[in-house]
Image 1: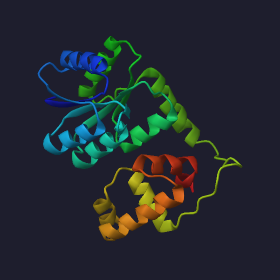
Image 2: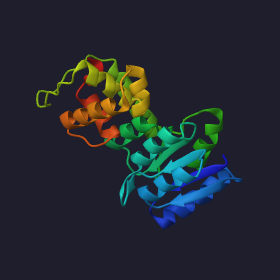
Image 3: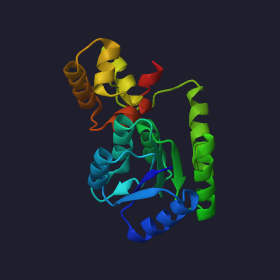
Image 4: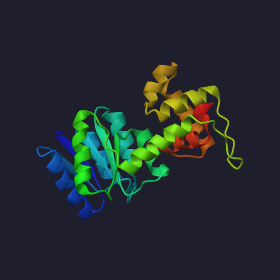
Length: 217
């Protein structure tokens, strides 16, 4: 790894993470950021190989940084390093393009070992996170029942096509090419989808569609 982005707002945590990263990737250049805004600016100026991203930041969510890096630098890998182990944080991060998901509560030696395995193409996942992901995909193979109190959301076939591609991380121009529509038309569809789902981001849209069972229709 040559260039690494470290996004963490707490100085003491950022310090030990930097030491750990230099232990695993000793010849790397590390760019540090404490806010989403700073990280997004760095992404426009530096070509990164790896980003270690916290989720809960003073000015937003690290998920937005993961998504931005995937869109602008698809060859870069993002690994979330966080305290959050719930579905509402995990799956939006993975859907935005995170390659791995590590919990800060783990022993630092274990985090270091999991980062080392990235060179073998192995996604770094905390054990509890790996179990949660496996359980989730196992549940996808079971018959799905919509809870009675869950609101019904009706999307057109075209909106479903757009939503699926948004959830997979394609950019608006890419979706336009795939569906033979202009970027502006795709943007209008995305606005309509967001309005229907009552969400405001790509990650929220993908998670809400998942909860509503839209991907299994």
